[in-house]
Length: 421
Image (cartoon, rainbow, N blue to C red):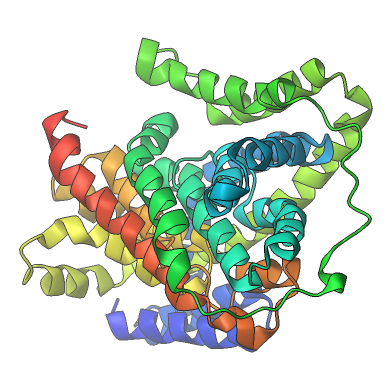
């Protein structure tokens, strides 16, 4: 199948998404048009699209069960308790670090990055009014912290990258810890000071209805993520395999038990399922376009281009993740298309499955915040920012994604190869 057909299909899907057409239907239509224009017959195109969806089905199941953990953290107040405690302990002297760290921790525990930003936003806006901090800086440090947490979390993007590479999820999370910590410091202490002073604070920015009463204790709030990460860590530490399909909901249920909030179980599961269902449906469309891209010669042209650099095939993983995140304006969709399309090529080049998945995952954070995606609008709305104000933050978000990616590649070339990961 010719690369030009797949590219036309991908571009068509992007244009439709920008025009506010359903992302899932846009991707399905783009995949169909791309397959036909690429030289396949209609039956062959449909078959390839279906095969693409089959490839992501195991990850979809795990993502749906992850909704239990995410729902418990949000609906029991555990997420709010974690973020408030971090901000209070770190203090206003290091307010940027506090907000970035709070969002990072929430995302690391499995909360969607946009939900994490929305959770921390009321605290950030309150602090912003007190210290006269522009909203652009508040939003940036939350997004930057969220991106750092997203590459070391059991979130959909990490799950599906690991699944497509047949890699251990906890290992894929672990190898990006150093890039995440570096990205956190760069966000809070360097890049934030170069942001334009846009987004004047006004009284209406505060949501007086956000209650902080009856939140669970910090220690109890940490039980759910600790149990989840502990179960996932059993495989690399002791060779005991606990599938994420079991570990993620088990962590959520453990949290409910310790916090004694059984009355919140039903609403937590419903909330988590609602959030994850949106991602699962998007992944169906993403799977169709991934099948078409995988069947095309795009990867051959990419290999030829990267062969001219000193790093060669190593760049396929982060570059494809960044490229597909730009196309879909989504970390999950970008990681899905890239990992489904290039996993075989990357592992054939001698890169381990763990690092292949990890570098695609981190590359998908570079351009996942573009305006044709929901993350851009959800985070802007959480801080009451105008479209023009929100647009000015994009270059700085991209810079953090690049910092994370460069650090991940550097760690691969040093510690990754040294330890044989």
